[in-house]
Length: 116
Length: 116
Image 1 (cartoon, helix red, strand yellow):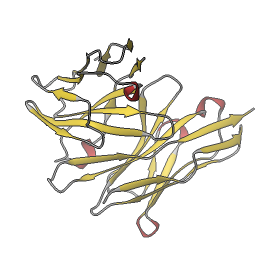
Image 2 (cartoon, chains in turn orange, yellow; image 1 turned 60 degrees about the vertical axis):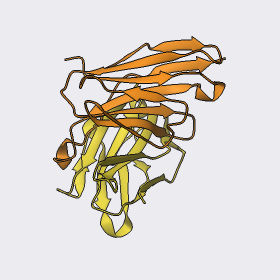
Image 3 (cartoon, each protein chain N blue to C red; image 1 turned 90 degrees about the horizontal axis):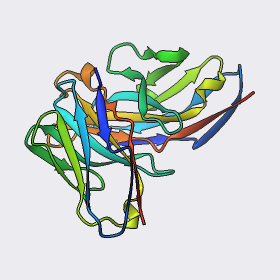
Image 4 (cartoon, rainbow over the protein chains, first blue to last red; image 1 turned 180 degrees about the horizontal axis):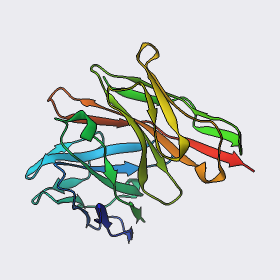
């Protein structure tokens, strides 16, 4: 049982380049999330999805797009990378909130992205 | 509005002494509360959760937290610190947003240093 897997683990981009981060979960979770982590700011929600084919904006969505074509995958795209997007990105998944005890989020190991 | 405040950005304790990491929250509904731990260059791991059952919650590695509704607090404690506890700790509140979906807010984190 792999849990939540993020690829790639590291990436260096030049300003203006594009890339896609992939998150895959094998726990049949309905909810999936993308966060960015910056020093002193904790984790901030970029986008999330409450089910296959649905996405919603989080706290800091600008400059990012997402897609959830399959239940197990949640893709985060940067169309034109900027230095301000240098960060560590975490994907998470959870069951739906109909059962409060199931609201635990399971995290991937993170992707370190540097934009030069 | 939902928010989480971790009152200390850094806490330093001696090995074998008690640990107290403070967290206050605000929420419009009855939230679920979590503590996650992040070791250097690692993803986030769930320590413990409160979901409206017992107010004193026991987690992994000897940590526990007490939900105090009157004080809107969910402080994390451990009787005796171990060197392996050195990490960053995040308090998280999970509630419903106005659309009825799960809304998750992370605190800014507390870095715990354990001195030999």
